Each structure stands twice: as C-alpha cells, then as structure tokens.
Amino acid sequence: MASPPQPRCWYAVHRCIRTISLAISPPAHTTASGVVAGLEAKLSQSGFDAWTAHHMAVGAMYRMVEQQASLLAYSDSFSLLGWLALLAIPLAMLFQRVPKR
Picture (cartoon, rainbow, N blue to C red):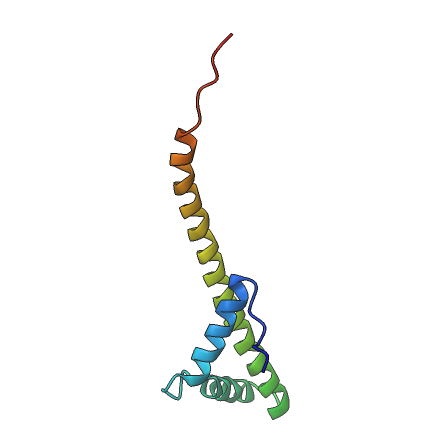
C-alpha cells in the first residue's frame, strides 16, 4: 500500500493540521459543523436562502482555515530564516581578511 503524498511546504502542513484539529475538537461551537451551522443561522436571518447560506458559511470556514494556515506558515518561515541568520554569524567569523596591497 502506497503512502499518501507528503506536503511540500509549511502552508500545506498547517492547512492539514488546522483542518483536522477543527474537525475533531470536542465542543460543538468549535467543530466545523458547529461553526458552519452558526454562520448558516446568521446568514439565514439576514435574508439568504438555505442553499446560499450554507455555501457562504462553508466558504467563510474555508477562508478562516486558509488565513490561519498562512499566518502559521509565515511564522515558521520567519523563524527558520532567523535561525539561519544566527547560524551564519559564526560562519562569517571563519572568513579571513583579505590583505591590502
């Protein structure tokens, strides 16, 4: 049995983690279906029909997950670049000065 393809960037990793954690979190108001149901109710009260309210709620949920994944991926990339910069400082000290002519 082949293993599933591995995500190739931080963004994909965080999007998968956020989606999974949202789907299995225990309180009803934090599960995906609870959030979608709450958004659907608010949109229905605003005058949208059930089908449109459902699709708008799912779209809003998708945007929330995408925004969180983007922020976490940006944070990871920034941390990685910071560590690489710190590691480059001792490397720069290994260089020798060029003698003046």
